[in-house]
Image (cartoon, rainbow, N blue to C red):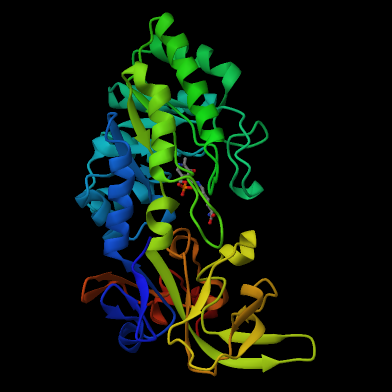
Amino acid sequence: MHYFLYKDGELFCEDVSVKTIAKKVGTPFYIYSYKTLTRHFSVFDDAFKKIPHLICYSCKANANVALLSVIRKLGGGADIVSGGELFKALHAGIQGNKIVFSGVGKTKEEIQFAIQSKILMLNIESEGEIEVIRDVAKDMKQKIPISIRVNPEIDPKTHPYITTGLKRNKFGILWTDALRLYKNIAKDPFLLPVGISSHIGSQILEIEPFVEAVKCLKKMFFKLKRTGISLRYIDIGGGLGITYKDELPPSPREYARAIARILKSTGLTLILEPGRILVGNSGIFITKLLYVKRTPEKNFYIVDGAMNDLVRPAFYNAYHEIVPVIESTNNQHIKVDVVGPICESGDFFAKDRKLPSLTPGHLIAILGAGAYGFSMSSNYNSRRRVAEVLVKDRDFYIIRKRESLKDLLRGESIPSFLEV
Ligand code: LLP
């Protein structure tokens, strides 16, 4: 469900025409719908209303500070993976006690920052990390709330690049080591075991892998209880998939029902780290058709957006729906590769896609681009990162300016011996 719809043959986001925004900000750019994001959050939150829970939005999906502010306003917290994300979440007004910190490579400085910000818990992913957290905690004379991210060895049957809960993945602590480590943590005067976590992967389309993971965590929770270690939080990560093409992911309600059933008897507070399900279909990417190139082999729509702006097709061969901003009146279609200007054959948004026959100047919308779109963008080919716009009802707000040419030089300098 989203609020990107055609009205009289023209694509709108809520009550604003995409063409109007393009006139104001130029192309390419991202648009997010406030109403869609709010709705996704509320549906997800509501699904879990029967059990104590906290939604810690996974900032990596899209860390624009305006969107983080929407999450804060709705009562959500944040799942962060770097000091940068912590900085942005705090800047958006998300309180430390609603922030959880995952990630295999937290630096000492990031750990200090997290402790100063009094975050809810650090999800630790290796034995080495426990040592570093302990040293920092000792220096700061504080007792730190810890959760172990266990690796439940479950195959979520998703793209191999976004599978995280298998033995061969770098994430989490092996199931078999967790009990021993919890016991060590519990004995430590500077560490406080408060939770148990897992995140098995992303764009997961079945309930079963989640159920298996939650059962694993619950088993460990009771095992720990018997040894006198009682936890407060169970963090099951994110990962619920969305529809990009014809996928049929479980609804938040089905997902919640299956999980709540397992956790009923525990008295634990559930922490959720959804990313894609909240923002994925809340955002689209708008790009302009520059050239139509026909070769004996293929037809190309060459557009002004590129893989540096939205890398998912290039990186994961991901499918994104592509539609014209102005519905075409003729019924002619052609099979095209939609490609960008970057000097890589991997710079494509779609291959052999049947699209309406369009001419240069037409605007094209790439749907389902709200998650892992802008957040994975780069300056490759010295391209300026694009503008982002938030629409609410009849109004739109530029929530990130397009970078200027000068921005491309920010932080760089020419050594004196090379000066012109
Ligand atoms: N929690 C942890 C610890 C994570 O690593 C992730 C995502 C999430 C939560 C949120 O997962 P979600 O609900 O969004 O599935 N760039 C890839 C996705 C990478 C996901 C990484 N971790 C993509 O574009 O598909």
